[in-house]
Length: 97
Image 1 (cartoon, one colour):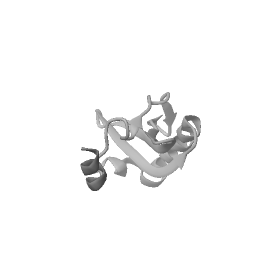
Image 2: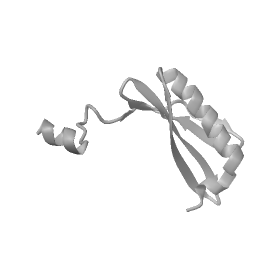
Image 3: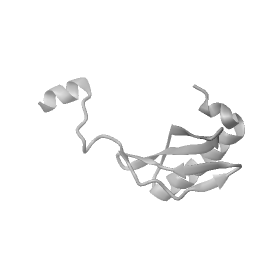
Image 4: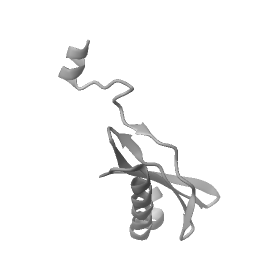
């Protein structure tokens, strides 16, 4: 079976990126930001969620970026920075579908 996995790029549960527990909620300009870096091998990818209540409805935007970090704490810090940048650049437009 491993021959077919290597041929077609299949991953087992152990090889798939694993999500770490989300960090503490941080408020920024009326949005709630949570860093949630994804484990990818020995590195962590920049990822998280941005949420806000809009017209009485809680809206949420998930983001994942290709930036990788050597430690979970570095990834959390950069994920929060990236979330602030997304908020500053897109504002409520990030919730448009």
